[in-house]
Image (cartoon, rainbow, N blue to C red; front, top):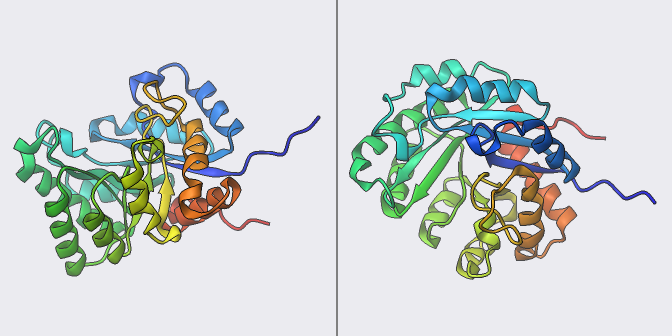
Length: 269
């Protein structure tokens, strides 16, 4: 008995280079493809690891990559330069700038350096035309202020990755034309308030991601996450938008193509 192929979907944010996946990449990609995950973006969080992340993108069809300095690493990594990021963007599979942003939950003491790093990434996004990938935690007011001022100074595109912030920051991001990405957190039973924020957003500004190896959705919560599970998250959150899974998978994939044109699937029959 044959089964219909699963609806194609994109994992817009994962970390395939993390040691959690060492030695498993072939099986990991096979499981993702079996779940319908046709494309994924693996994110480099420290520029010195960019060669390993790039190698993964070069090795697998449908795997793209982005690079930047994660805000939690801003204090102990060399300050990135615009020229470095622009140079990386020449690679055909380099599709985004970051992740960058502000994290005051764990690393509030380096707030000034995080903001300096964020400004560099924003300028690289402007110059390359590639989307900025933002991590924001416990920094809603500063993040809204910086993104608004910077966008006024020169437009850029952006996704608020693994969005878990408040309604005000969500509205600021949407007003600037940015996208919000849903991780497994949005599928947790206690995340009703977060789901309400997403439900108030236009569905054409929504992406889905795993942020794997972190934040596995139910029923895998607390275990290692992986790109295949983006389909589980999407199946659980599609109802937020009054959609079934195939509709939501298609819509978020189209949204991804619009925001990440270098990773777009191209014309389909």
